[in-house]
Length: 320
Image (cartoon, rainbow, N blue to C red; front, side, top):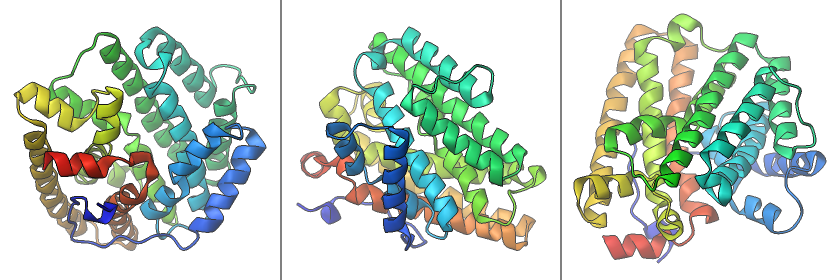
C-alpha cells in the first residue's frame, strides 16, 4: 500500500511546493554543519529523513529565498528540539523540562547569558537574530511569545507522561494548539507581506479565528499521520488516542471522529475566511489568507511523503 492510498483530507484549495526547496535544503544542511547542530551519523540522517526543507516549502510555497531559508532552518532546529522533549528521559522528567525551558526562553528573550556550547542555543539565537535584523521588533516579540507557548506545552506533556495521564478532550484540544508550534508558522506567513499585519488586524477576533482553525487543522492532521509512530512508542498525546480513551470507543471509531471534526473545521475556516475578506479588502489581508490556505493544504502533502511517519500505511489499513 503506497502513501498515496492512505486516507487523506480534502481541501477546497490546492497545495504547491516552493520551487526553491532544493536550494533551501542545501543551505539548511550547511547551516546545521556550520553551527554543529547535529553530529554526522544517525542524528543527521534522522533529521534529513524528516524532510524539513520540504515541509517549509509546502507550507510557504510563495516565500522568497530569505524567508524560506528562515522557515527551513527553524523547522530543522524545531524537529531536533521536539525529539529531545518527546523521547528519552527528558520526556517523563518535568523538572528537567522546566529547567531547560527556563534556559532556552531566558536566552531567547535576553534574560540570561546564552550558553553557546549548546547547539540548539546557537541555532535558535541565530534564527532570532535574523528576524531581529530584518523585521520590526514587534513582529519578533509576537513570534517569541508564540514560541514560548510551545515550551510550556512540552512541560504539560512531560507532567502527563510522568503521571501516565491521558488528558480530557477539551484540555487536549486547547494544549495541542501550543504543542504543535503552529502559531509560530502563522506568524511567518506575515513575512510574505511587505510588512507584518497591523495589530488591529492580526488581533481581530476574525483573524484570530483564522489562525486558531488553521492551527487545529494542521495539528489534527498531524495526529492522524503520526498515529502509527505514537502507538508504537506509547505516546498518548494524539487526538485519536485521546478520543478513544475518553469516549471508550475503538481506534477505528476515533479515527472517524477525528475526520468528522476536521471536516467541520474546514467548513468553519471557509466561513471565517469570507468574513475576513468582507472586513478587509486590501491586498495584504488577501495574501495572508491565501498563504493560510497554502499552509493547510501543504501540510498534508508533506505528511504524505515524510519518512518521519513511515509505517502509517499498515496501521490505517488495519483500523479502517
